[in-house]
Amino acid sequence: MAGFLEAVLSTLSRLDPRSVIDILIVAVIVYWILLLIQGTTAVALVRGMVTLILLAALLGNVFDLVVLTWVLRNSIPAFLVSLPILFQPELRRALERLGRTSRFVGRTGASNETVRALEQIAVACRRFSDRKWGALIVLERDTGLGEYSDTGVEIDGLVSVDFLMSIFLPNSQLHDGAIIIRGDRVVAAGCLLPLTETLLSDQHIGTRHRAGVGITERTDAISVIVSEETGTISLANNGRFVRNLDESKLKKILPALLQPQTSSSWFSSLKKGVHRPARIQRREETAKLDL
Image (tube, rainbow, N blue to C red):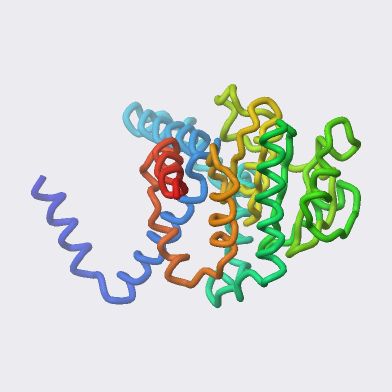
């Protein structure tokens, strides 16, 4: 024990300000990576990989297993090469966040036309809910959604209640797909979106809701979902899912989510509970939205 303490003190005595800064930068990067993979299947993947490596290293050292140690040592380069493939969604999300310069300089906020469009969306969702019409509306923010709008029918129409209701009319050709809205214009309808993998255990979540959450995991878009079975209005943002909204709440929430974010708000997002379960976060967000 005394030898271990001496080794620790000797290491600390060799630290200089540059080494401390180096360690802090690495710690922030690791913390950010943990935040990105929180609530995804990557968490279990990382846990399994770390457990396998530690177990193999322990067995090799304790029982002096030469072959196992050799395999473990020589498999590290292949392991590093496989990381971008295994964690492609998380790496893509990280690079997209770094590329959004507006996170640091701030957006200009929603225009009057966009605010009017958001009000029209809120009214339309209330009517969908009353009639139990299924709907999936995606609002584009900083990240372009061109690759997803290309999967649907190009429209370029002004957002209005009647227009939205004509799109999501039951049994219409565009009813089952998503519409993508940029500003106050409907860019495309009948679009196909990626499905989330974090809600697979919830039997009450259908394909429309999985798609609405999935697009917010890969981009910074906002999606509004109306259930065809229950008429419940839900909202997804940043991979998180909130239910039981109404017209008045949507009119308050949507403009607030489109407001510019400063660097301080970006930094505060890094501090959001890495160690808090996702169900607790959803419960807290639901309370915040209960305006």
